[in-house]
Every structure is written in C-alpha cells, then in structure tokens.
Amino acid sequence: MDRLHPDRIRADIDAVETETTARIAVRVLEHETNDAFEAARQEFERANLHRHRDRNAVLFLLAPKSRRFAVIGDEAIHARVGDAFWNELVDQMTPYFKRGELTEGILFGINRIGERLLEHFPKPAPPS
Image (cartoon, rainbow, N blue to C red; front, side, top):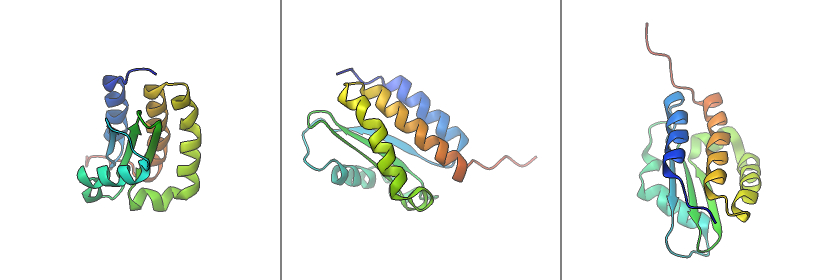
C-alpha cells in the first residue's frame, strides 16, 4: 500500500476549489471502522462542511486499516449528480484502492467530482 502524498492531493483540491464554489476535504481514519459511510458523515459534520454556503462540499474518507472508503457530497451537489454518479465514482475508485494506490484513487475521485462541480458550480467571473 502506498503512502498518501498530501502535496499532490492538496494541489488537486486547490485546482478544483479555485475554479468552483465547492469545498473538498480528504480524511484518513487511523482506526478501523465497519461503516465508512457513517464515519464519513460524522467527519463531514465535524469539519462543518454541511455549513458551506453553496451546500456543494464533498468529503473523501479513507479507512486503510479496514480497507474501506466512502465519498459523501452535500445536498446541492447530490441533487445535481444523483446516486448513480456516486455509485459509479466508488466503482471507479475501488480498483485503485485494491491495488494499494491510495493517492491515485483519491486523485481520480477529486478530478471526477471536480468535473461535475465545474459543470454545476463554476466560480463566478469577477466583475470587470
């Protein structure tokens, strides 16, 4: 299993957040969990992502000791992309994690959701 590369992850998050009104967070659990989705919901609230003005924040949660992960998006992004998108994203990220490529899996997820965030929540152009 690879070591996470926070600088690469931060760079991709910054690229998405610069172009959209969204917030993206990545959390890594140091302990085991049987329910990564519930842990992600708790982290989402703990990080106050549910209070983001545009309700389009996204959280990626990794639980390496449990070999589990979850992706959760707030109500505005979920309303735009729906369950099918989230299920497809998880299916596409899973092979990375099975190969132990944690950083690549997270980067893939950030960039896929970034495309949708840019489509639905682009940052407004500054007044000229």
